[in-house]
Length: 105
Image: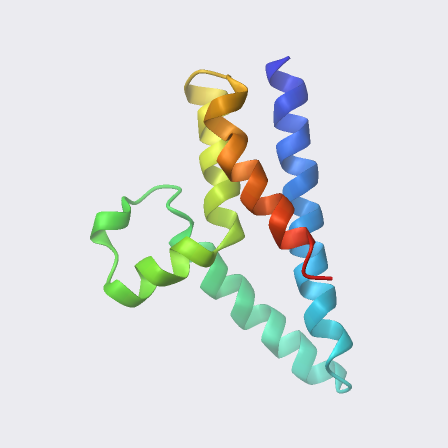
Protein backbone atom coordinates (compact mmCIF):
# COMPACT_ATOMS: atom_id res chain seq x y z
CA UNK A 1 0.00 0.00 0.00
CA UNK A 2 2.90 2.36 0.73
CA UNK A 3 4.26 1.85 -2.77
CA UNK A 4 0.85 2.60 -4.27
CA UNK A 5 0.60 5.84 -2.26
CA UNK A 6 4.09 6.78 -3.39
CA UNK A 7 3.05 6.18 -6.99
CA UNK A 8 -0.03 8.40 -6.50
CA UNK A 9 2.11 11.21 -5.07
CA UNK A 10 4.51 11.03 -8.02
CA UNK A 11 1.70 11.03 -10.58
CA UNK A 12 -0.17 13.93 -8.94
CA UNK A 13 3.07 15.92 -8.57
CA UNK A 14 4.07 15.43 -12.18
CA UNK A 15 0.57 16.35 -13.34
CA UNK A 16 0.57 19.51 -11.22
CA UNK A 17 3.95 20.64 -12.49
CA UNK A 18 3.10 19.82 -16.09
CA UNK A 19 -0.15 21.77 -15.89
CA UNK A 20 1.73 24.72 -14.37
CA UNK A 21 4.24 24.68 -17.23
CA UNK A 22 1.48 24.40 -19.85
CA UNK A 23 -0.32 27.32 -18.25
CA UNK A 24 2.78 29.43 -18.77
CA UNK A 25 3.52 28.00 -22.22
CA UNK A 26 0.13 29.00 -23.59
CA UNK A 27 0.80 32.64 -22.78
CA UNK A 28 4.13 32.90 -24.63
CA UNK A 29 4.88 32.97 -28.31
CA UNK A 30 8.70 33.06 -28.38
CA UNK A 31 10.28 29.63 -27.71
CA UNK A 32 13.54 31.10 -26.43
CA UNK A 33 11.73 33.06 -23.73
CA UNK A 34 9.85 29.93 -22.68
CA UNK A 35 13.08 27.98 -22.36
CA UNK A 36 14.69 30.73 -20.27
CA UNK A 37 11.62 31.05 -18.04
CA UNK A 38 11.48 27.31 -17.42
CA UNK A 39 15.14 27.32 -16.42
CA UNK A 40 14.55 30.14 -13.96
CA UNK A 41 11.43 28.47 -12.58
CA UNK A 42 13.19 25.15 -12.12
CA UNK A 43 15.92 26.88 -10.16
CA UNK A 44 13.51 28.93 -8.06
CA UNK A 45 11.29 25.93 -7.29
CA UNK A 46 14.14 23.53 -6.56
CA UNK A 47 15.85 25.30 -3.68
CA UNK A 48 12.93 26.06 -1.32
CA UNK A 49 11.56 22.52 -1.39
CA UNK A 50 13.12 21.75 2.03
CA UNK A 51 14.61 18.45 0.96
CA UNK A 52 17.86 18.81 2.86
CA UNK A 53 17.63 22.13 4.68
CA UNK A 54 15.18 23.25 7.34
CA UNK A 55 12.87 26.12 6.46
CA UNK A 56 14.13 28.03 9.49
CA UNK A 57 17.44 28.55 7.67
CA UNK A 58 15.73 30.24 4.72
CA UNK A 59 15.55 34.00 4.28
CA UNK A 60 12.05 35.49 4.50
CA UNK A 61 11.43 35.70 0.75
CA UNK A 62 12.37 32.05 0.30
CA UNK A 63 9.98 30.96 3.07
CA UNK A 64 7.16 32.69 1.20
CA UNK A 65 8.21 30.95 -2.00
CA UNK A 66 8.37 27.59 -0.19
CA UNK A 67 4.74 27.89 0.91
CA UNK A 68 3.59 28.31 -2.70
CA UNK A 69 6.02 25.77 -4.18
CA UNK A 70 4.40 22.47 -5.26
CA UNK A 71 7.74 20.68 -4.85
CA UNK A 72 7.63 21.44 -1.11
CA UNK A 73 4.42 19.48 -0.68
CA UNK A 74 5.59 16.65 -2.91
CA UNK A 75 8.85 16.28 -0.98
CA UNK A 76 6.97 16.33 2.33
CA UNK A 77 4.58 13.63 1.16
CA UNK A 78 7.41 11.45 -0.13
CA UNK A 79 9.35 11.91 3.12
CA UNK A 80 6.28 10.89 5.10
CA UNK A 81 5.75 7.81 2.97
CA UNK A 82 9.36 6.65 3.02
CA UNK A 83 10.59 7.70 6.45
CA UNK A 84 7.49 8.04 8.63
CA UNK A 85 4.04 6.57 8.97
CA UNK A 86 2.41 5.86 5.61
CA UNK A 87 -1.04 6.95 6.81
CA UNK A 88 -3.24 8.84 4.39
CA UNK A 89 -3.87 11.57 6.96
CA UNK A 90 -0.16 12.46 6.90
CA UNK A 91 -0.05 13.05 3.16
CA UNK A 92 -3.64 14.22 2.71
CA UNK A 93 -2.95 17.98 2.95
CA UNK A 94 -0.02 17.64 0.56
CA UNK A 95 -2.10 15.80 -2.03
CA UNK A 96 -4.91 18.30 -1.56
CA UNK A 97 -2.56 21.20 -2.35
CA UNK A 98 -1.10 19.40 -5.36
CA UNK A 99 -4.58 18.54 -6.58
CA UNK A 100 -5.71 22.14 -6.19
CA UNK A 101 -2.77 23.30 -8.29
CA UNK A 102 -4.12 21.08 -11.08
CA UNK A 103 -7.30 23.16 -11.21
CA UNK A 104 -5.46 26.25 -12.49
CA UNK A 105 -6.03 25.03 -16.06
